[in-house]
Amino acid sequence: MSTESAPNGSTRRDELLAVAAKLFAARGYHGTRMDDVADAVGLNKATVYHYYASKSLILWDIYKRTADFTVDALHDDPTATARETIYHFTRRLLTGIATDLEAAAVYFQEGPYISEWFTEEQVAYIRKAESTVYEHVRDVIDRGIASGEFYECDSHVLALGYIGMTLGAYRWLRPHGRRTAQEIAVEFSTALLRGLIRDETVRNEQPLGAAQN
Image 1: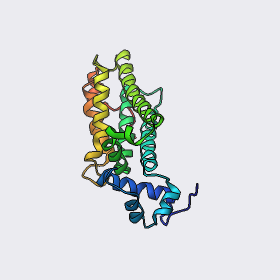
Image 2 (image 1 turned 60 degrees about the horizontal axis):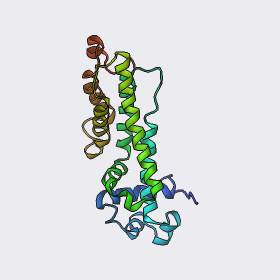
Image 3 (image 1 turned 90 degrees about the vertical axis):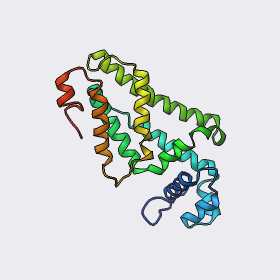
């Protein structure tokens, strides 16, 4: 498929995807027509169909890219402490969300309805990605408990709470807001980790670990 460059240097396909995500976020998937996407990007509908044969394929591309980003953001240094790992998860997740708020909004707004828009295989792909995120966060918390770094807690509940806290930030996070995504990641991580870290000195002086970068 063509990857003809758009005027801003991105591919035309990427431009279409960004425009569609903005429309889906504002109007909902069901409330947006292919004509709307074509008009917003300044192309005729036939050209839009050249890049995406259906509206559901546009939504799938948004979903798959968002799910893949979230899973990729979990990759961590196996030598890092549990608290450092959680902080770096948070930093990568929030800075990523801040760069593409519309895609994050579409992902969560359309979540209850994806079985209507996607194939069984596509839905399974998304659910597997979501399970991977949950399990990875839970396992890091369990690792911190097992090592004595964290207090005993219900890692299942805490992992679900963490996911809601970070991924739900698309509702109010703004790239040019009062606090940057990086600063918010520090605030979130510090608040969470000070409730988990057993060692008082570490909890008070270095809750995010040795390196905050």
